[in-house]
Image 1 (tube, rainbow, N blue to C red):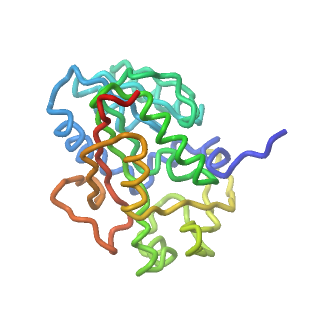
Image 2: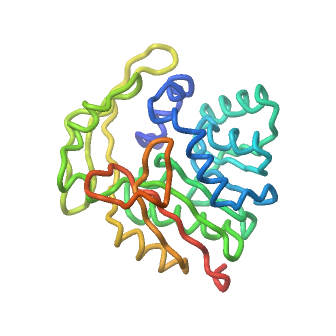
Image 3: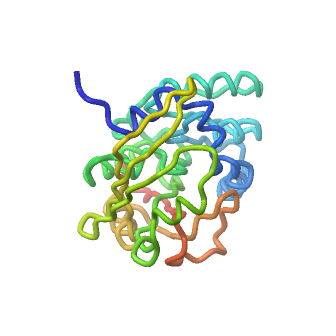
Length: 259
């Protein structure tokens, strides 16, 4: 049997704990921004990639948008369906690998927030497959909004100190080692699952500098590529990205001639 990757093992039984993580508290403000980028047009169809327990998808559906959510974790989606039922909204949640989505030019907008798949993959090629797959899912002139780890941050700051300072009730990170050749942070992630069992996973995540993201998106035919600082619950085009920002917010529009 193939060994599970850390991002598969972590979310096998972590849905309730996940919703208690500090970074999940900014959902409404982040959806305010998404709505603004959609022009408050309720006919806009939205694909939520790596939707987890559905926090953005459900909030947007409550506001009247047609949303579909995909995630690799059946456990996370089970929780998402329960929350959607409780909220009285209908969302098409599907277990899917973001590298191989079945959609072709079906959505007006795609969102991929809080490292929803990208950049968790173990190779750069696998991360790029996610971008390609999402691009295929978008209609001509569709908008792609996502957040990812800012590679400028670890050049000037300690990732381990950042996680220690901003530690909440969820996972904890230790023994961080940032590789300047690959821009990957290797660490030990410790967390307690929904059954109260403690786990330790050997993890690594890819940090990207803005010029890399711009080039990757240009190679997929995007235009109007803009990158800003990603602030919890307060996404805005007014926040310029700096070396002090842990995450970046990326907004790009798909060229009409690209399929």
